[in-house]
Length: 181
Ligand SMILES: CC(C)(COP(=O)(O)OP(=O)(O)OC[C@H]1O[C@@H](n2cnc3c(N)ncnc32)[C@H](O)[C@@H]1OP(=O)(O)O)[C@@H](O)C(=O)NCCC(=O)NCCS
Image 1 (tube, rainbow, N blue to C red):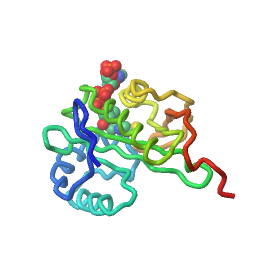
Image 2 (cartoon, rainbow, N blue to C red):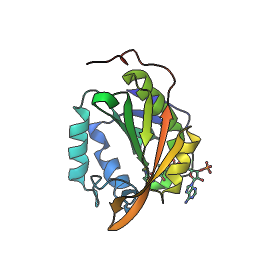
Image 3 (cartoon, helix red, strand yellow):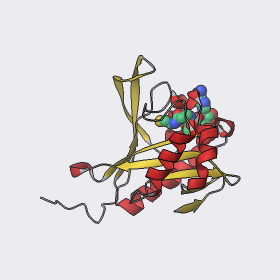
Image 4 (cartoon, rainbow, N blue to C red):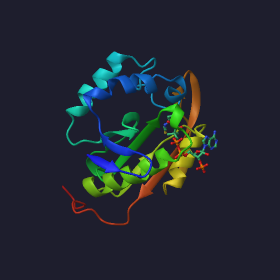
């Protein structure tokens, strides 16, 4: 997969992205805003394991954000199951030196569209930590709507926190919206 944007290229991960991943993902400021399954410290082994698992996964739902021929971030979505198979959760991170240039907003708009179009979705949602004002802003700029605040719903770095639920919904019925009952 490859989507060429104005500020970046969103593309499939490659085995050769391991060094860039370690360089940029090994950042506590990034880890503090992500689920605990995102490792910290982020080692070469973590990078290799991630790339091995991701490059063999079908369908492909996790992508690198490339700037100047280097992978500087990640964006991906998780299609939901059963009656929620028309929904997916999206997540993303970007290397700190590249923050504030509109790179993630542009990538989020593109991958939201891609997820809806290729997976027949009606809803893509994200659940940033409430203190993550930058991510909330990115979601709003990309057309996501704040649906609610999930009070005391998560624990990060030993602290109980609120999360915000944002969603982008498509009014178009997907081809496989019918009942499977
Ligand atoms: C959140 C993150 C992805 C944003 O990426 P980015 O490419 O810098 O985002 P953009 O440049 O597209 O937009 C950032 C917006 O947030 C705003 N912003 C940044 N820090 C902010 C802060 N502390 N308070 C309020 N707004 C802030 C910027 O001003 C900008 O809005 P604007 O265009 O209206 O000025 C990046 O900071 C990151 O990777 N953080 C760590 C991981 C993470 O939080 N992932 C998301 C988990 S839900």
